[in-house]
Image (cartoon, rainbow, N blue to C red; front, side, top):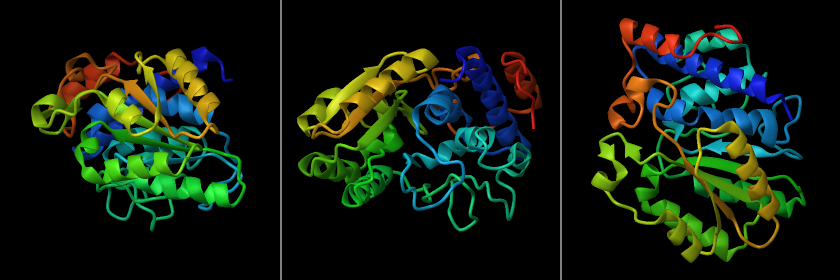
Length: 281
């Protein structure tokens, strides 16, 4: 495992990348990206088995699908800092003809991106198909996906969740960014979903809670437990209790920063709270 001090430094640098990307073009989604920074760093630096070179087929390696594609700033940052493409390319975020569009797409050929994910609610379905393909090919590696709690309000998810359990898709780990916020307010005020643990369990899933969803060591421990539970006849759900806007005090605990970029003054305040560690792009 990578040194925990390095990983925590990387988390801070990824936060800086997120803030700078959305500020540069005055658009994007910083809140959820900041809240999932520790998860992405843990996933790509510690948990997933990856090949040295990227291929779309993902044979003989773990595969990750991002369902809530609007948090692309954190995805792009961690991909670049994990060697998928040059870090300097982060400067092109959301620019015309860039490979780094606001929501990940595939026709630009960006390494690390296997599906277009802008329309919410589809990631679990795609992941199930990939997981079944691995089973048919006797490929022992895992499928990971991340979805937002707000997008679970869409019905397609629950058909997929039912299907995965009914077909014993036990090489699948679905993590839910459980921050309680979405673009129009709190998830409870937009459409209450009740107890997600009870719902997933009622649909036949094995569920793990990571209460400290912005703590690297807690995430690594919880996700390793999730991996240990694979191969036992049930899909795995990880409820990742995060804070939207984590790491920037004026962005935390509110939906207001779901899709708004900081201005010049706000950027400087946010960057001061996350001092440079590994070098900006």
